[in-house]
Amino acid sequence: MDSTALTIIVTYKTLPGKAEAFFKAVTESGVAAGVRQEPGNLGYNFYLPLEEEDTLVLIEKWASSEAADAHPFTDNVKKLASFKPDYVLETKAVRYRLFA
Image (cartoon, rainbow, N blue to C red; front, side, top):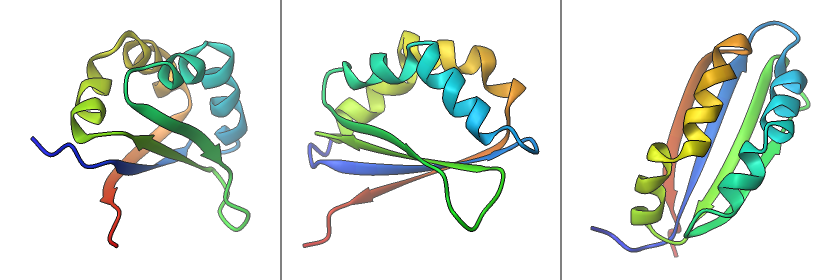
């Protein structure tokens, strides 16, 4: 396994007019705070693109690929999955390593 730090950029295409409501659901449910407490999490921040409606971007930073690989099996992700279909049409996640 690769222990190099990595960043994951997740793009959520939401139902019309639901991007901010999805963000609110993620924060009010405790999912965002919970993920930030997961071992190896270095950042979990959301952004609303200025030029793109019905889109929410999440930038996750992890200390290692092992930490990122464990994340999908947490209670936080299970909780997110319970309400995500109410807001999100499509999800795309891309992993990046620092190229230095």
